[in-house]
Length: 205
Image (cartoon, rainbow, N blue to C red; front, side):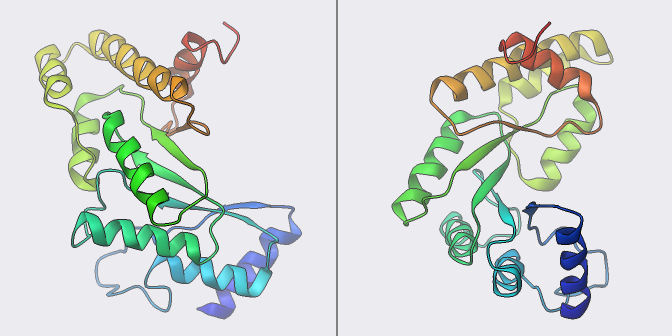
């Protein structure tokens, strides 16, 4: 596996790729622990050992705890280990509670983490899909948001309008607090993200 990964990284380097997001990812059924790179920190350490500073490496962070973590403390320590292995920055799982993000950042910095932690943003366009994703990845949907989405039923237009208001306000709060950036999970739908950026005066109308 290491030789294959080394060859793939060398190919990316030759193509001019300079930024990577190093993830363990979700393992297919029957793959056990997933080979030599059991954790993302192992992959980060391998990239650094083989390629030095050729790549800017981002890793994942979970403000509301990774669903497979033993505890919030263990999850926070795992994140710090990824950074110490050589990560340059992090992108969080999406969230709708800014307190969770700021708490996580404060606790990570208290452990000595100094890299930028960019908040992940999920536009709300499909209530059923959002709830399914959130239940699978451990992202909390605040009760008031969940109830409003359920109340709209199959009214797609109302769900999208409500979602734009909620996520725009979320982004505005984060920007006001001085976050290092915003990372949007577009799910191959550019329009909702473009609309949010326009509302934030970050994109021409």
